[in-house]
Structures are given as C-alpha cells and as structure tokens.
Length: 287
Image 1 (cartoon, rainbow, N blue to C red):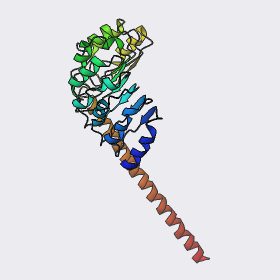
Image 2 (cartoon, rainbow, N blue to C red):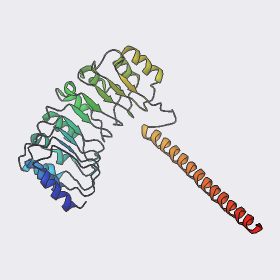
Image 3 (spheres, helix red, strand yellow):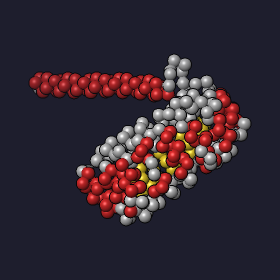
Image 4 (cartoon, helix red, strand yellow):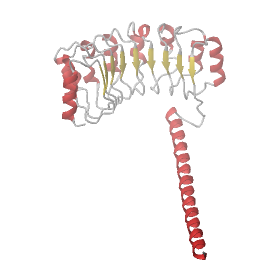
C-alpha cells in the first residue's frame, strides 16, 4: 500500500477508529499519524517496527494541543524515535496506561523520567532492550512502582539483584515481571520466596546465570500461583542472545540436513521411476 493510499485510509479512520495496529509498515509516515490529533475515539495505537516513522507526529499532536483518549501506545523497534519526540506525550495522552518503548535505541532515561513523572495512569511498561538501566528513574519517581502491574526489563543493562530490589519492596500491584537476559540471580528468587510482590503470577528469568530449575521448583512449592519461566544458560554462553543465536544456528543446520535428505529422497524417487519406465519399455520390446 502506498503512503498516499494509507494516508487516505487513515483520514477516514480519524473520526471512527478506536484501535489502530500498523506494525511493520514500510509506508506509514508521521504525516499520516499527525491527523489523529483531532481524534476523540482512538484508544490503542501500535506502530511497531515502522521504518519511516521518526516521532515528529507526537510534536504535531502537542502543537495542536490534542487531548487523545489513548490508553495503549506501542512504538517498539522504531530506531528513529528519540527523546525529543516523546516530550509532551503525557500532555496529549493523559489517560495512557500501557507504554511500549522497547528496542528504541534513541530513547534514553531522560525522556523515560519525564514520562514517568507526568503519566500518572501508567500501569504497564515494556522496556525490553532499553539502551540504559531504567530502574533508577522507575525507583525514584513517586508512585510508579506502586502502580505498575506489568514490567518487562528483558536484556536491559545494569539490572541485577540490588537494582531490582525496590521493585520487590514496593511492587504490591505487580503481576508480571520479565527479567530474562539480565544479571539477576538467587537474590531475586529469595525476595519472591519471602513474599515480595504479593500479586505476582508470572516471573520470567530465562537465561539467567546461577539460577537452577530445582530452585525454581522450590519457589513454586512456596508460591504455587507464581508461574516461573526459566531456560538454563550454560557457563560457556555469555548472554541470552548468544543462547538464542546458538539455538537458531542449530535449527538452521537441522533444516539444511532435512532439506538435503529431502532432495536426496526426491532424486532417489525420480531414479526409481526412471528405472521402472526402462523396465516397462524393455518388457514391451520383448513382447
């Protein structure tokens, strides 16, 4: 779909759409998104991995003094969006409860701090692969930890047992915590074991060194309502992504082997069919 066609479609949707999901679009632009500054219905906007979006549409919303009812906002994987683009987001989206700014290399703790201070309704936060340790602004901003029900810190730098401690001390409403690929260890399990985060139902600690399946089973005995997701990380593996890479290479090798076997089988069937034809021709000649 061309940018012009998409812009025309979105123009029609401005006064009607409540949910818009345009993930992985290569034609979506900020100009198309700027139209929604006048929307009174839009509650969810997902524009993950949209290569042509740079975030200037948010500045247009602010300039238009928009007041969107947006509650769910996901801009994951948009490398062009930077701190300056997120300034003023809370002023135009005062009802924001879910924010996904994961895998956005241009967003730092500067704009995160500003958002946490002004988005008083924020309950769910996805910070997977955030370029800096986000726990300091989360811990320092009053009321943030107490409000959060979902927090994804997957593969964030600087996240360890000591930095995540405020989450366990004050996260009374937290139900999902994702810590895969971080530096947390037994200290985190012990906090949960001792009753931290009483509403917790899902804890992800995939590829975390020093944590065993036996220790996780022990936690399940004490807190049966907590689903613990763990993947063993071998000592020779440096990070979660090394593990994923190793596994994907293994899958590729397996696929190549299967493909090779499949090709060989196909050739064998063709050869057998040719031999059968030759035998039939020979029999016909004898007759």
